[in-house]
Length: 544
Image 1 (cartoon, rainbow, N blue to C red):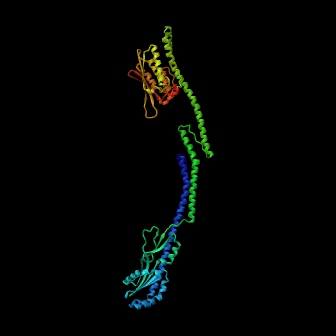
Image 2: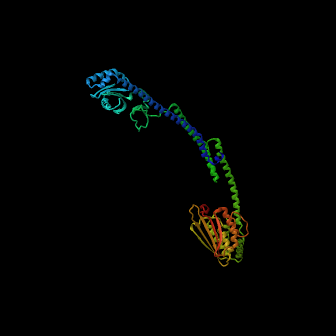
Image 3: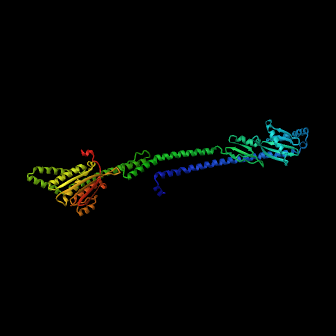
């Protein structure tokens, strides 16, 4: 568990734990509710099926009674004479006598709505209706009775749909006489009793054929061998009972309470901890200026944020003090490096100045003195300030003038783009290499020095400036090239030769670090020095 917690972010771990606490209880209640609802629905369906069976059994009992009663009535003397006689007047008298003996008994059954006597010999048809409104059934029953005479059976029971309503017909056939009883299953006592109870939810009815497209239909119980079924059409699922309603309220309450707890814990505990975590990530990436915003929740969490902010303040104060100390040390190193250049050039200038004074060449001495003053002012300027490329090249020109006054023949050629003139550089970055060219040239008659400066275009926001110093003085000695290639720009070395170039390399590393690079090489008898530094315009306030 500890290993898993170390790998999973706090947010996901928190969400997982909350879900593990909330989901099981909610799922359990939902399962109980679903089971209760299912059991209620199943119980309702079982009740419907049982009710269908009760109705079917009730009608079957009535039908058995009707069949027995009709069979017994057909052995009556009056009915036998009715079936064996073809005289209409005799038939009417026998019909009256038969009905006076059996009508009341047959019509007392709730399902019996009519009875019919038919003599096929003289086509005599006599209907008896329980209600006058049923007389419209006579024509249909006449056709049925005429058809029964063609049967070979004495007793038949069958269903017939008349005017869209299912009826059951029980008939006894004797020679020429037929007794038929018409039963309406819809008048069954139990059927009407159940329908009075469940009227709002659904209803039961007898049908001859079950419709196949009824969605809320429970297939009914078949009545004996007849094509008659008891069907139920209505809603099988019952409204929620009291227990289910209480469970729904508990589930909704639990969801609402858990949601409130989840958002409360997220807002007052998780979010502050995530803010602290994001700030720590930013701090680990080096952004020590980042601070945790005020956390106005629990005191324990607020103390963590305040403690981290106080710790960062202390670290920044310590870094500022350390940086100031290191800056002073670096400044001292830069000044030492600038003063480390051998003074023999200045001694030569002073000796030549003394000679010009002794020879009473005052104007030349004055020119040399002014040029030397400008040169010294440039070399001993405050190392902390940058100067423009224009100023650096002006000092190079002053140095060339001094060299020519001291008897050397040095020509300077400049090539730079207009945008380079105002770019900043460290003092003496170019001058040191020009001095090195004049002091160590292998030719004595004339020296040509060419300086080219260009900006290197880059697709990124930063650009570099490439400075190339080329002279035709014979090139660098091989040992100088090897020694310079092995020089570590990050380490100060105390040297007695090539001090200037090493000092430039070290000063550039102190200021620009890996963004600056210096290389020297020989090409066709020429000494070439290449300096690569970031191209940054000199601020206006420093030019003033």
